[in-house]
Image 1 (cartoon, rainbow, N blue to C red):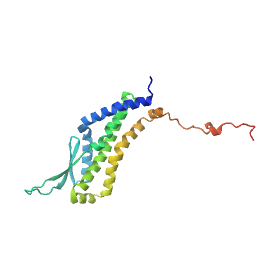
Image 2: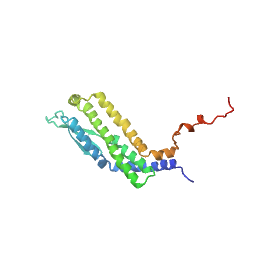
Image 3: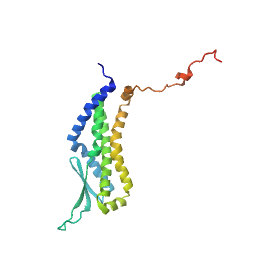
Image 4: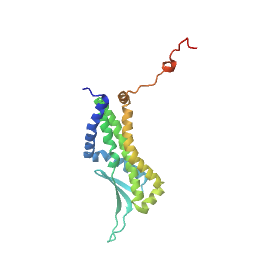
Length: 214
């Protein structure tokens, strides 16, 4: 029995997506390394007096702030460190990889799509990591964090909007939209889409009329 191309892609995706997610979970540390560096650089430029560094611990980012904690029983204080979990934004990586692997492509073209897509997905994860850091500084770092963010021009509403956009929209929409863009011709062949007539003389309204009709 011959399987339609659409069904072949669906079946391949059912196999490739779990495999890509499993590989992503195993390699999450190296996959997030570029994101940690990018978020650290951006936060250091935007909030130099508030954020000292971003330290990666496997799937977690530790945001080392310049704020001090409350004194403990012995009077000692320490630096406030906030923990971010970028895996909630990084699932766009295996989603895009699974879609590309399920598409019938030549090896070179598949590698090219992955080479184009992964940096784009890293930017998506970096957006989420950046606004997650701002969210933690706004709502978990106390009045000093709020004051520093307000001085830098960040409001709670803007932070919340960027956080929700990076959490709910970008990781789901970006990999699918990019996959469609890179494989437009193949997707059009699957759905049987055809272009509109190129000239005005090919439509039904231009059919020749019977000369005998008054």
